[in-house]
Image (cartoon, helix red, strand yellow):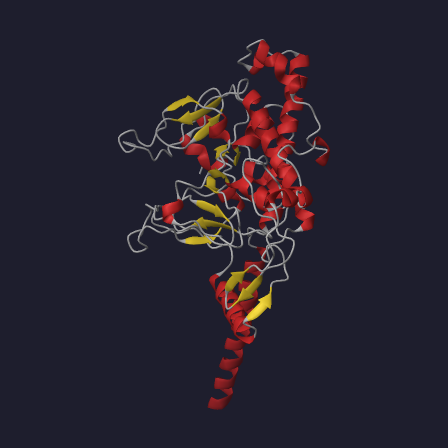
Length: 427
């Protein structure tokens, strides 16, 4: 009798645990994760989180376990074959053929983006905080208390707004230019004054196949060798003129036919600048159409530059410091002892290099989304109802461009925010 009771209790516990496991698995599957896709086919992206603390390290793009397994596999392959020819570009010093044209389009899209933004910011106001890096698109700055500048505690984290410009909308961090990204991938501390620093996205395009006269780079025709982990180049030295004549993949001014998205003229906004129009309400129908064409052109340039850069980064390595914004395009980071972030004493001032993301290479500078530029300022108590977007996208949307599908979820267009007098009624 006792055995029967024990057996029934065990079966009841098994059934209960089975139901709990099914409930937990069902909850984990239905929870909206970052990889969930919306109806348009783009991954769901929520409002970006607040900037991390200076003592926290950036998240790894590739998990640490994968990096350890990859390093072990490379070590075993090196022991099995100490001398081998690297076959996969760009690790062997050669270019990836299908990415040469992409590099030209990214370089051209960046130039077109900066020129278009210089025209657009004269019509649509851009505000920046004097004491921190916060940016806002609109005539009146928002009232969201997120300032981290000096004396922010005494001001209750309220921003102090002033007029901004193109550099506040989008920024491109600089890195060292590498003449030979495979033979000499690291810049020493004593070489910091002799090697030029250029925008990292331009350096990425140069390494991917873009040729600029001002920043020469070495192009190889044969793959390099790897001998016990060291890169050795047995290719014969060619004359500089022959090398430039045979192995040049482009010029410093790419042809305009490389991309159909960049063929739209941006001279249509010149009339707006000649009339010194500083408010959108002063525009007539013709000027609004010109402004809409300019915004569409800038937005297309932004999307093409971002997508092309992401495609190049899948092949060409880009490294960033885990604690500071320093970035370096190439297989390895530089050796400069100039890191002043957290725990730099234990590293003797060296940077803690890790794999970079697209936001490290192109700073999107996320801003709060405003539905009406002439409306009241955003309320701090209602900030959970507001969405965000890159400053370029927010600027182009107010200029008349349609909202891209990949930013709809981030901007929270499907959320109706309460009015200022309804703050007490919202739970």
